[in-house]
Image (cartoon, rainbow, N blue to C red; front, side, top):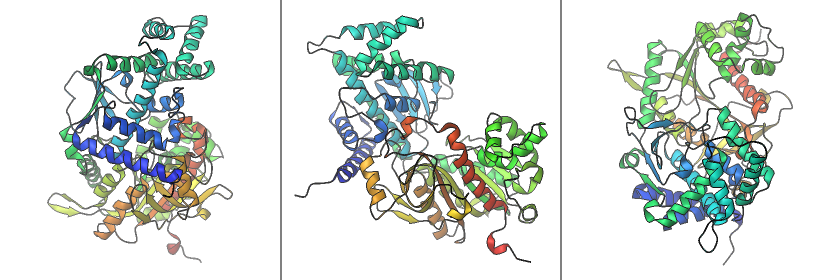
Length: 569
């Protein structure tokens, strides 16, 4: 029998993880310590996501992966033994504390000291995301328990010292803190410096950002204690539940339908039924800052830097003030009330004036006055949620007993992605989207080219791999997609789902075949290079140039006549 390659084994493991997860959702519950949970854990370790680093090494606790996961999970998740995933439970009139993690827009509620409920509003990708993170957390918790318990079943001295540090009300400092971190490093199988860095991350960084997580001593202690409690009684076994309402929601667009309805009614109220609309999937600042930033600085009596990127850095902390200023020139903000977690910014481009634009942004104001384009900026979707919201947005709707079809002229995606062909900060232009885990592939007629961007900026053109989730990635699989005939230049989570909805809308006649599609991604990480994964942290100011370069190119495509309309004198 021919031996499978590493990439083939990893792809089987990813498929196995997804298949088991789908089956468990239908079943309604599972225990990570049971056979199904062990299979999930085995699959995750077999494809060994790069983002989880040393997860497969039983001797050491993976700290960067732990930081990444807990940034995206609610406070106290490390000690919970009862976790519920549901769709539409109404917690608004209860005493349950609502928690939103530091780096993931998901809603969860603390039901009790040991129980948390996640409200799933963003589809299957969100469920996979949660399950991979819970599986990782359980693997690392087992490691902690293995380090602190002797063969006789007792716990080591280091564990008792950690317990004292975790339960101490007064903050440790000086030599006491050094000794506590040294003691903790022994439990973790890590160096003092590595343990110190994670301590500072949780106890300084999270406190600075609003105490999104417990302190490091408490987190590690609760991880180990939960496993110890499981061995004491079966009543303490960690159990994950999927409610009937969640099972019924999967495959339906409940939240996306409400989101699109709210947006369309808002556009209708603004009188934009007959106006040309350009949809931009992006962050909530780059298009706005490019369109109004210079004017905001001038109005505030401040100088406008010649370099557009210096201007962006200068106004980064003025989000609220810029939005208020821009509202005088055609901008309105629609905050999400559907639980989809996707806010919207609507810009009536015809109301803007040249005073507001930086000299580096080219804009034909006569064209704006004649064409009166409307820019609808939608916040980032999450994985499969992209299909649901775009599918609902592009279809006609009924208002005041008549069918209304908005004139969607273009769909523009300004995305974050992992690069396979370059480095962090590079830009990728999609020629197709290849869906991981299925045979679905979508060719992209991309209205963006290398020539649209600044000369000598690193641009990679080719297919993009649409992956199942941030945690469901494997270096060998990704390398295979890059070096094989696919020649994929990057990976992302939403593009294929957006394109699936656009293709469906064209087939159904909801939008014209001539609809412009523009896909550009900046590389936020490189998952096949150690030290450049998402777990290594954000790009900070380094992300300004690629983000705003893409935003400027797309904005200029919208506010200037297309080449076919430009005539030579």
